[in-house]
Amino acid sequence: MKRLYIKTFGCQMNEYDSMRVARLLAPLGYEMTDDKCGADLIVLNTCSIRQKAEGKVYSMLGRLRPLKQENENLIIAVGGCVAQQEGKKLLGRMRHVSLVFGTKSVSNLPAMIKKIERSGGRYVDTGEAEHRETAFDDAFDHNKGDSKALITIIEGCNNFCAYCIVPHVRGRERSRRAHDILDEARVLVRSGVKEITLLGQNVNSYHDSSNGTTDFPALLRKVAATNGLERLRFVTSHPKDLTDELISCFKELPTLCNHIHLPVQAGSDRVLERMNRKYTRGEYLNKVDKLRKVCHNISISTDIIVGFPGESRDDFNKTMELVREVEYDHSYSFKFSTRAGTKAAGFDDDVSGAEKSVRLSELQALQKEIIFSKNKEFEGTSASVLVEGVSKTNEELLTGRTTCNRIVNFSGDSALVGKIVNVNITKAFMNSLRGEAAVDH
Image 1 (cartoon, rainbow, N blue to C red):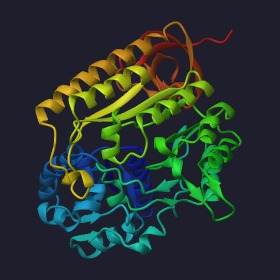
Image 2: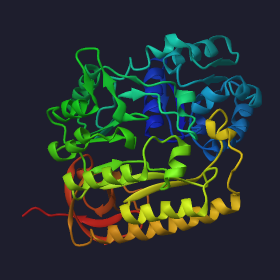
Image 3: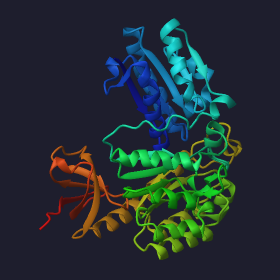
């Protein structure tokens, strides 16, 4: 067997793509390894949504150079959004890289690897239209024994937010056929999967007209009806596409987890308009209110950008006010970074780096207070937890997540891995909860 090492950067969409890469290369004799030093093929699945993420890719490529010098037969491949964006430039900059393949050419990866194995050389394939048509084709081969799984239902994005590179590297939206998604869900559940997460850059805009019309709420209902499925999640949602029908699913579908990721990005209407987000602060807050009316204990997480070009201190204060009002259960907050090719790259009224850092610190300090306060409310309660494995921070503890997406580390028998158990919560921390498995009497 040949050894394959995959390093994934970025979000769950990339995690799904990495699993797909492993499946595609298995027939070529590649077996996954955690040791990059002993690998025959190293694949970096990259993310370019922020400058920092792209920088991490180049940093790791620099660290891989000595491995190529020690083993000239080592194949180093770069895929994902950075590959799609940089193409030949990446190959020219990193002479030890053998292959650059974009988001539109993953299905062609086995042929490219075989070509390199047979005759060497260095190649770039960022994909043309013919590769787009096979993007969903090989998604049915899953590892047995997994309790959680991801299913991509839509690729690309049509929104063109001013700061976002995704439409430029992932292309326009293309929804997968509903019956293929349902078939995959059934395969997963039969293999032991208890929780499925539906993935897309904007899952809310899912639309399949291949056999009747299936929009996202209809798809949710169909997947939720899969016999044996115990938990269902989806990510990521665009607020403008969060309809009343979709909101009602949180009341109607018992398997749909009480958590939604709803990126707000900013709390100022002026900034939201410049970002091209297509909703107002008031519209966003109205949808949050509707969510909490149908599911009072719903957990809401978000993304926030600070220091977007032209953001005044007053604009930023409006974001802080919104965070206090919504009281997010978690947030991913970042300083604005220019991405070439986006509309915001042409804005010349950027906020200084020092001011961005100040604002980010203020925002994150507030969010930490909110998270810890909300976590404290779980002390003395019992939570249903899907046990994922051994805790990364303490090998004597198991770890899993509640339906509201909180991490719980608890004492319990390893035989519980893969099962859903009740855990008595004894202590709250900033990023997790601690507990003990409930004993049945």
